[in-house]
Length: 377
Image (tube, rainbow, N blue to C red):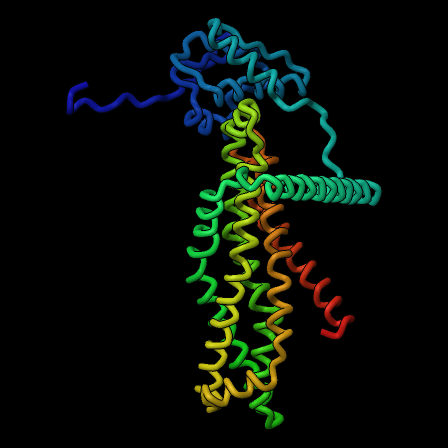
Protein backbone atom coordinates (compact mmCIF):
# COMPACT_ATOMS: atom_id res chain seq x y z
CA UNK A 1 0.00 0.00 0.00
CA UNK A 2 1.41 3.38 -0.97
CA UNK A 3 1.66 6.24 1.49
CA UNK A 4 -1.21 8.10 -0.22
CA UNK A 5 -3.49 5.08 -0.52
CA UNK A 6 -6.18 5.04 2.15
CA UNK A 7 -7.05 1.74 3.86
CA UNK A 8 -10.16 0.03 2.55
CA UNK A 9 -13.22 0.66 4.68
CA UNK A 10 -15.03 -2.49 5.67
CA UNK A 11 -18.75 -2.24 5.02
CA UNK A 12 -21.78 -4.50 4.82
CA UNK A 13 -24.08 -4.19 1.82
CA UNK A 14 -27.67 -5.42 2.08
CA UNK A 15 -29.82 -6.09 -0.98
CA UNK A 16 -33.13 -7.87 -1.48
CA UNK A 17 -34.16 -10.05 -4.42
CA UNK A 18 -36.81 -12.74 -4.99
CA UNK A 19 -37.79 -13.09 -1.36
CA UNK A 20 -34.26 -13.30 -0.01
CA UNK A 21 -31.73 -10.97 1.54
CA UNK A 22 -28.26 -10.87 0.00
CA UNK A 23 -25.37 -9.81 2.24
CA UNK A 24 -22.05 -8.78 0.76
CA UNK A 25 -18.94 -7.15 2.15
CA UNK A 26 -17.77 -7.69 5.71
CA UNK A 27 -20.12 -8.95 8.44
CA UNK A 28 -17.98 -8.07 11.45
CA UNK A 29 -18.63 -6.75 14.92
CA UNK A 30 -18.54 -3.12 13.72
CA UNK A 31 -20.97 -3.66 10.85
CA UNK A 32 -23.23 -5.86 12.98
CA UNK A 33 -23.71 -2.93 15.37
CA UNK A 34 -25.03 -0.93 12.40
CA UNK A 35 -27.42 -3.72 11.38
CA UNK A 36 -28.91 -4.56 14.77
CA UNK A 37 -30.81 -1.28 14.96
CA UNK A 38 -32.45 -1.89 11.57
CA UNK A 39 -32.86 -5.67 11.60
CA UNK A 40 -36.66 -5.57 11.42
CA UNK A 41 -36.55 -3.53 8.22
CA UNK A 42 -33.77 -5.62 6.67
CA UNK A 43 -35.46 -8.95 7.35
CA UNK A 44 -39.21 -8.44 6.99
CA UNK A 45 -41.64 -11.30 7.35
CA UNK A 46 -41.82 -12.10 3.64
CA UNK A 47 -38.12 -12.88 3.41
CA UNK A 48 -37.40 -16.64 3.50
CA UNK A 49 -33.59 -16.84 3.25
CA UNK A 50 -30.34 -15.00 3.74
CA UNK A 51 -27.65 -15.44 1.08
CA UNK A 52 -24.12 -14.94 2.46
CA UNK A 53 -22.18 -16.33 -0.49
CA UNK A 54 -20.97 -12.82 -1.36
CA UNK A 55 -19.58 -12.12 2.12
CA UNK A 56 -15.84 -11.47 2.06
CA UNK A 57 -15.42 -11.83 5.80
CA UNK A 58 -17.47 -12.89 8.82
CA UNK A 59 -16.55 -13.13 12.50
CA UNK A 60 -18.24 -14.54 15.60
CA UNK A 61 -20.38 -11.44 16.07
CA UNK A 62 -21.62 -11.74 12.49
CA UNK A 63 -22.40 -15.43 12.96
CA UNK A 64 -24.30 -14.63 16.14
CA UNK A 65 -26.31 -11.99 14.24
CA UNK A 66 -27.35 -14.49 11.56
CA UNK A 67 -28.27 -17.21 14.07
CA UNK A 68 -30.18 -14.69 16.18
CA UNK A 69 -32.19 -13.53 13.14
CA UNK A 70 -33.05 -17.11 12.28
CA UNK A 71 -34.16 -17.75 15.87
CA UNK A 72 -36.34 -14.62 15.89
CA UNK A 73 -37.97 -15.68 12.61
CA UNK A 74 -38.67 -19.16 13.99
CA UNK A 75 -40.41 -17.61 16.98
CA UNK A 76 -42.74 -15.86 14.50
CA UNK A 77 -43.37 -19.16 12.66
CA UNK A 78 -41.12 -18.31 9.70
CA UNK A 79 -38.43 -20.65 8.41
CA UNK A 80 -35.46 -18.42 7.59
CA UNK A 81 -32.62 -20.26 5.85
CA UNK A 82 -28.99 -19.20 5.69
CA UNK A 83 -27.60 -20.10 2.27
CA UNK A 84 -24.29 -19.82 0.45
CA UNK A 85 -22.01 -20.46 3.44
CA UNK A 86 -18.67 -22.06 2.70
CA UNK A 87 -17.24 -24.77 4.97
CA UNK A 88 -15.51 -22.36 7.36
CA UNK A 89 -18.58 -20.14 7.63
CA UNK A 90 -20.85 -23.14 8.15
CA UNK A 91 -18.60 -24.43 10.93
CA UNK A 92 -18.59 -21.01 12.62
CA UNK A 93 -22.39 -20.79 12.40
CA UNK A 94 -22.72 -24.28 13.86
CA UNK A 95 -20.37 -23.47 16.75
CA UNK A 96 -22.21 -20.26 17.58
CA UNK A 97 -25.60 -21.98 17.39
CA UNK A 98 -24.45 -24.72 19.75
CA UNK A 99 -23.37 -22.12 22.31
CA UNK A 100 -26.48 -19.97 22.18
CA UNK A 101 -28.46 -19.87 25.44
CA UNK A 102 -31.31 -22.41 25.51
CA UNK A 103 -34.75 -21.19 24.59
CA UNK A 104 -37.39 -20.90 27.25
CA UNK A 105 -34.85 -20.88 30.07
CA UNK A 106 -36.71 -19.95 33.27
CA UNK A 107 -35.59 -16.73 34.96
CA UNK A 108 -33.40 -17.00 38.02
CA UNK A 109 -35.50 -16.77 41.14
CA UNK A 110 -34.27 -15.22 44.38
CA UNK A 111 -33.09 -17.84 46.88
CA UNK A 112 -35.74 -19.11 49.24
CA UNK A 113 -35.38 -19.48 53.01
CA UNK A 114 -34.48 -23.15 52.52
CA UNK A 115 -31.81 -22.19 49.98
CA UNK A 116 -30.33 -19.65 52.39
CA UNK A 117 -30.19 -22.25 55.16
CA UNK A 118 -28.55 -24.69 52.75
CA UNK A 119 -25.92 -22.14 51.73
CA UNK A 120 -25.26 -21.30 55.38
CA UNK A 121 -24.94 -25.00 56.24
CA UNK A 122 -22.48 -25.55 53.41
CA UNK A 123 -20.33 -22.65 54.61
CA UNK A 124 -20.40 -23.95 58.18
CA UNK A 125 -19.42 -27.42 56.97
CA UNK A 126 -16.55 -26.04 54.91
CA UNK A 127 -15.37 -23.96 57.86
CA UNK A 128 -15.50 -26.95 60.21
CA UNK A 129 -13.63 -29.09 57.69
CA UNK A 130 -10.96 -26.39 57.35
CA UNK A 131 -10.53 -26.19 61.13
CA UNK A 132 -10.07 -29.96 61.32
CA UNK A 133 -7.49 -29.82 58.54
CA UNK A 134 -5.70 -26.93 60.26
CA UNK A 135 -5.51 -28.89 63.52
CA UNK A 136 -4.17 -31.91 61.62
CA UNK A 137 -1.59 -29.71 59.88
CA UNK A 138 -0.60 -28.22 63.25
CA UNK A 139 -0.13 -31.74 64.62
CA UNK A 140 2.04 -32.64 61.64
CA UNK A 141 4.23 -29.56 62.20
CA UNK A 142 4.55 -30.29 65.93
CA UNK A 143 5.47 -33.90 65.20
CA UNK A 144 8.10 -32.71 62.72
CA UNK A 145 9.48 -30.29 65.31
CA UNK A 146 9.69 -33.18 67.79
CA UNK A 147 11.68 -35.19 65.27
CA UNK A 148 14.02 -32.25 64.70
CA UNK A 149 14.57 -31.91 68.45
CA UNK A 150 15.68 -35.55 68.55
CA UNK A 151 17.84 -35.07 65.45
CA UNK A 152 18.97 -31.39 65.38
CA UNK A 153 20.95 -31.96 62.20
CA UNK A 154 17.66 -32.01 60.25
CA UNK A 155 17.02 -28.35 61.07
CA UNK A 156 17.87 -26.08 58.14
CA UNK A 157 19.51 -23.31 60.14
CA UNK A 158 20.37 -21.22 57.08
CA UNK A 159 16.72 -21.16 56.07
CA UNK A 160 15.66 -20.18 59.60
CA UNK A 161 18.14 -17.28 59.66
CA UNK A 162 17.00 -16.12 56.23
CA UNK A 163 13.36 -16.08 57.28
CA UNK A 164 14.27 -14.33 60.55
CA UNK A 165 15.74 -11.52 58.49
CA UNK A 166 12.75 -11.35 56.14
CA UNK A 167 10.16 -11.56 58.93
CA UNK A 168 11.89 -9.59 61.66
CA UNK A 169 14.65 -7.25 60.54
CA UNK A 170 12.85 -6.08 57.40
CA UNK A 171 9.65 -5.42 59.35
CA UNK A 172 11.21 -3.27 62.08
CA UNK A 173 10.62 0.12 60.37
CA UNK A 174 6.92 -0.38 59.68
CA UNK A 175 6.27 -1.94 63.10
CA UNK A 176 8.12 0.83 64.93
CA UNK A 177 6.36 3.57 62.98
CA UNK A 178 2.95 1.99 63.51
CA UNK A 179 3.48 1.62 67.26
CA UNK A 180 4.86 5.15 67.57
CA UNK A 181 1.77 6.59 65.88
CA UNK A 182 -0.54 4.45 68.02
CA UNK A 183 1.17 5.83 71.14
CA UNK A 184 0.73 9.37 69.83
CA UNK A 185 -2.97 8.78 69.14
CA UNK A 186 -3.58 7.20 72.55
CA UNK A 187 -1.89 10.07 74.34
CA UNK A 188 -3.76 12.71 72.36
CA UNK A 189 -7.19 11.10 72.68
CA UNK A 190 -6.62 10.06 76.29
CA UNK A 191 -5.55 13.55 77.32
CA UNK A 192 -8.62 15.06 75.64
CA UNK A 193 -10.91 12.83 77.71
CA UNK A 194 -9.01 12.84 81.02
CA UNK A 195 -8.61 16.62 80.97
CA UNK A 196 -12.35 16.92 81.61
CA UNK A 197 -11.86 15.32 85.03
CA UNK A 198 -8.51 16.88 85.88
CA UNK A 199 -6.83 13.47 85.66
CA UNK A 200 -4.36 14.15 82.86
CA UNK A 201 -1.56 12.38 84.68
CA UNK A 202 -3.37 9.06 84.35
CA UNK A 203 -2.73 9.17 80.62
CA UNK A 204 0.59 7.49 81.43
CA UNK A 205 -1.22 4.50 82.89
CA UNK A 206 -3.58 4.41 79.91
CA UNK A 207 -0.72 4.36 77.42
CA UNK A 208 1.33 1.83 79.35
CA UNK A 209 -1.46 -0.69 79.89
CA UNK A 210 -2.88 -0.34 76.37
CA UNK A 211 0.45 -0.63 74.58
CA UNK A 212 2.15 -3.24 76.75
CA UNK A 213 -0.82 -5.49 77.35
CA UNK A 214 -2.86 -5.35 74.13
CA UNK A 215 -2.17 -3.01 71.26
CA UNK A 216 1.57 -3.46 70.91
CA UNK A 217 1.58 -7.19 70.23
CA UNK A 218 -1.88 -7.30 68.63
CA UNK A 219 -1.20 -4.67 65.96
CA UNK A 220 2.25 -6.13 65.38
CA UNK A 221 0.68 -9.53 64.78
CA UNK A 222 -1.81 -8.01 62.34
CA UNK A 223 0.99 -6.35 60.39
CA UNK A 224 3.02 -9.57 60.35
CA UNK A 225 -0.04 -11.54 59.23
CA UNK A 226 -0.56 -9.20 56.30
CA UNK A 227 3.12 -9.01 55.46
CA UNK A 228 4.68 -12.37 56.25
CA UNK A 229 1.62 -14.65 56.39
CA UNK A 230 0.66 -13.69 52.85
CA UNK A 231 4.28 -14.12 51.76
CA UNK A 232 4.29 -17.68 53.16
CA UNK A 233 1.15 -18.56 51.20
CA UNK A 234 2.41 -16.93 48.00
CA UNK A 235 5.86 -18.56 48.14
CA UNK A 236 4.68 -22.08 49.00
CA UNK A 237 1.70 -21.74 46.67
CA UNK A 238 3.96 -20.78 43.77
CA UNK A 239 6.08 -23.85 44.42
CA UNK A 240 2.90 -25.94 44.53
CA UNK A 241 1.79 -24.51 41.17
CA UNK A 242 5.15 -25.34 39.59
CA UNK A 243 4.98 -28.86 41.09
CA UNK A 244 8.20 -28.28 43.04
CA UNK A 245 6.63 -29.74 46.19
CA UNK A 246 5.71 -32.90 44.29
CA UNK A 247 9.31 -33.07 43.11
CA UNK A 248 10.49 -32.83 46.74
CA UNK A 249 8.31 -35.76 47.72
CA UNK A 250 9.59 -37.73 44.73
CA UNK A 251 13.15 -37.15 45.95
CA UNK A 252 12.22 -38.33 49.45
CA UNK A 253 12.27 -34.83 50.99
CA UNK A 254 9.62 -33.72 53.47
CA UNK A 255 8.08 -30.35 52.44
CA UNK A 256 7.02 -29.67 56.03
CA UNK A 257 10.59 -30.01 57.26
CA UNK A 258 12.05 -27.93 54.45
CA UNK A 259 9.38 -25.26 53.90
CA UNK A 260 7.08 -25.02 56.90
CA UNK A 261 9.21 -25.58 60.00
CA UNK A 262 11.85 -22.89 59.22
CA UNK A 263 9.13 -20.32 58.59
CA UNK A 264 7.17 -21.16 61.74
CA UNK A 265 10.31 -21.19 63.91
CA UNK A 266 11.52 -17.87 62.49
CA UNK A 267 8.10 -16.33 63.12
CA UNK A 268 7.97 -17.61 66.71
CA UNK A 269 11.46 -16.19 67.33
CA UNK A 270 10.94 -12.80 65.72
CA UNK A 271 7.37 -11.86 66.72
CA UNK A 272 8.27 -11.39 70.43
CA UNK A 273 11.21 -9.23 69.35
CA UNK A 274 8.97 -7.17 67.08
CA UNK A 275 6.45 -6.91 69.93
CA UNK A 276 9.18 -5.54 72.21
CA UNK A 277 10.14 -2.96 69.58
CA UNK A 278 6.48 -2.01 69.18
CA UNK A 279 6.10 -1.57 72.95
CA UNK A 280 9.14 0.71 73.15
CA UNK A 281 8.08 2.76 70.11
CA UNK A 282 4.53 3.10 71.44
CA UNK A 283 5.74 4.31 74.83
CA UNK A 284 8.10 6.80 73.16
CA UNK A 285 5.27 8.14 71.00
CA UNK A 286 2.95 8.39 73.99
CA UNK A 287 5.61 10.12 76.09
CA UNK A 288 6.34 12.63 73.34
CA UNK A 289 2.67 13.54 72.86
CA UNK A 290 2.12 13.71 76.64
CA UNK A 291 5.00 16.16 76.87
CA UNK A 292 3.65 18.30 74.02
CA UNK A 293 -0.06 18.14 74.90
CA UNK A 294 -0.05 17.88 78.71
CA UNK A 295 3.35 19.14 79.74
CA UNK A 296 4.24 15.79 81.32
CA UNK A 297 8.02 15.73 81.11
CA UNK A 298 9.83 12.53 80.06
CA UNK A 299 11.22 12.18 83.59
CA UNK A 300 7.74 12.33 85.14
CA UNK A 301 6.43 9.96 82.47
CA UNK A 302 9.23 7.48 83.23
CA UNK A 303 8.75 7.71 86.99
CA UNK A 304 5.03 7.12 86.82
CA UNK A 305 5.51 4.34 84.26
CA UNK A 306 7.93 2.46 86.48
CA UNK A 307 6.06 3.00 89.74
CA UNK A 308 2.48 2.36 88.58
CA UNK A 309 2.87 -0.23 85.82
CA UNK A 310 3.03 -3.86 86.82
CA UNK A 311 5.61 -5.92 84.99
CA UNK A 312 2.87 -8.44 84.25
CA UNK A 313 1.35 -6.01 81.75
CA UNK A 314 4.49 -6.48 79.67
CA UNK A 315 4.57 -10.20 80.45
CA UNK A 316 0.99 -10.72 79.22
CA UNK A 317 1.89 -9.25 75.83
CA UNK A 318 5.02 -11.37 75.51
CA UNK A 319 3.15 -14.55 76.50
CA UNK A 320 0.71 -13.99 73.62
CA UNK A 321 3.42 -13.46 71.02
CA UNK A 322 4.50 -17.10 70.38
CA UNK A 323 0.87 -18.22 70.11
CA UNK A 324 0.07 -15.48 67.61
CA UNK A 325 3.19 -16.39 65.65
CA UNK A 326 2.20 -20.06 65.56
CA UNK A 327 -1.29 -19.17 64.32
CA UNK A 328 0.02 -16.92 61.54
CA UNK A 329 2.68 -19.39 60.44
CA UNK A 330 0.41 -22.44 60.42
CA UNK A 331 -2.40 -20.72 58.53
CA UNK A 332 -0.06 -19.13 55.99
CA UNK A 333 1.74 -22.39 55.22
CA UNK A 334 -1.47 -24.44 55.24
CA UNK A 335 -3.11 -22.19 52.67
CA UNK A 336 0.03 -22.32 50.54
CA UNK A 337 -0.03 -26.12 50.57
CA UNK A 338 -3.64 -26.05 49.33
CA UNK A 339 -2.99 -23.86 46.28
CA UNK A 340 -4.15 -25.47 43.03
CA UNK A 341 -2.62 -25.28 39.59
CA UNK A 342 -3.83 -21.80 38.60
CA UNK A 343 -3.15 -18.20 39.53
CA UNK A 344 -6.75 -17.64 40.64
CA UNK A 345 -6.31 -20.21 43.40
CA UNK A 346 -3.06 -18.57 44.51
CA UNK A 347 -4.62 -15.12 44.80
CA UNK A 348 -7.77 -16.39 46.51
CA UNK A 349 -5.91 -18.43 49.14
CA UNK A 350 -3.38 -15.66 49.78
CA UNK A 351 -6.25 -13.32 50.58
CA UNK A 352 -7.95 -16.01 52.67
CA UNK A 353 -4.71 -16.57 54.57
CA UNK A 354 -4.48 -12.94 55.66
CA UNK A 355 -8.16 -12.69 56.61
CA UNK A 356 -8.19 -15.96 58.55
CA UNK A 357 -4.91 -15.18 60.33
CA UNK A 358 -6.11 -11.78 61.52
CA UNK A 359 -9.46 -13.22 62.57
CA UNK A 360 -7.86 -16.04 64.57
CA UNK A 361 -5.33 -13.69 66.18
CA UNK A 362 -8.14 -11.45 67.42
CA UNK A 363 -10.16 -14.44 68.65
CA UNK A 364 -7.19 -15.87 70.56
CA UNK A 365 -6.39 -12.42 71.96
CA UNK A 366 -9.95 -12.21 73.31
CA UNK A 367 -9.58 -15.66 74.86
CA UNK A 368 -6.31 -14.62 76.51
CA UNK A 369 -7.96 -11.47 77.86
CA UNK A 370 -10.74 -13.49 79.44
CA UNK A 371 -8.27 -16.01 80.85
CA UNK A 372 -5.99 -13.38 82.41
CA UNK A 373 -9.01 -11.56 83.82
CA UNK A 374 -10.19 -14.79 85.50
CA UNK A 375 -6.78 -15.56 86.99
CA UNK A 376 -6.37 -11.94 88.09
CA UNK A 377 -3.30 -11.04 86.07
